[in-house]
Amino acid sequence: MRYAYKPLAHLGEDRGARLVNHLYAEGARFSRAFYYYWRTVLELDEAEARRRTAEELRSSANTILSHLDDSAMFAVGLVDGGGFQPIGLFGLRPLLAHAEGAALEQAIADRYPRPYGICHALGLLDEFASLDALRATLLIVAEKSLAGGYGCLFFYTSDHRLRAIYRRFGMEFPPALAMPRSLHLVGMYDPRDPGNLARMRAVAKRLRSQDGASLVASRSERSALR
Image 1 (cartoon, rainbow, N blue to C red):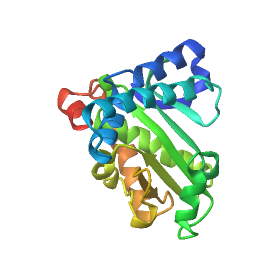
Image 2 (image 1 turned 180 degrees about the horizontal axis):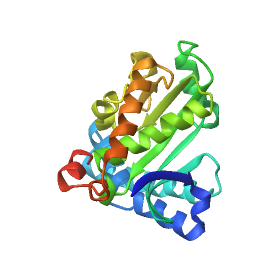
Image 3 (image 1 turned 120 degrees about the vertical axis):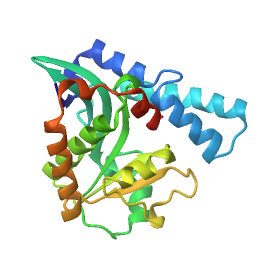
C-alpha cells in the first residue's frame, strides 16, 4: 500500500459525501477540533461550546458537500493494487480564494515571498490518523504547493493542538499572523526553504520504506492526534 491523492470530485458524489460526513460527524476529527476551539481557546461554557461545535460541523460539512466539484479540494487515500481507499481531506487554493484570505493577506503585509497559497480543512479519518498518514498528507501538500508555484503556504485551523506537530515539519507561527478576533491558528510554510525540502525528502524516503501493515494507525498514534 502507498499514500496518494486525487481531486475530491474524482471520488464520485456518493464516496465524496461519505468521506466528508465521516470526517465531520459528531465525535470525529473535526468535531473534537471545533469543540476544543470553542471550549478551550474561546473559553465558552460547556453548553454553548457544544452548540457552537454542532453548528460549525453542519456549516463546514455543508459548504464542502454543496461544492463536491471544487477543484481545490482533495482526498488523501491508500492505494492497494488498483483501489483507492479515502482516508482524509484537505483544501489547497490561492490565499485570496479563501474566506479569510483578505484578512490574512493584510496581516502578512508582504513579509513573505509571493504568490500565497492556503491549506485548510485538513483532516484524517480516525482509523487512519497515524503520524505517517499526517506525514504523507503534508508531503502531498508541500509537493502540490511547489508544483503550483507558491512562494509561501499558510495553514489555517481552529485546532491549536496541532502547533507542536506542525512545527516538526518546518512550519512557523509568527505573531504577526495571529488572528486577534477569531484566535484561529495560522502557520506559515516555505516550500522552497532548503531545510523544509530536506525534511520532505526524508519523509518521502521513510514512507517508501514502510510496509503495508505500518500504514494503519496504531492506537497510540491515533491517541497522539486526538
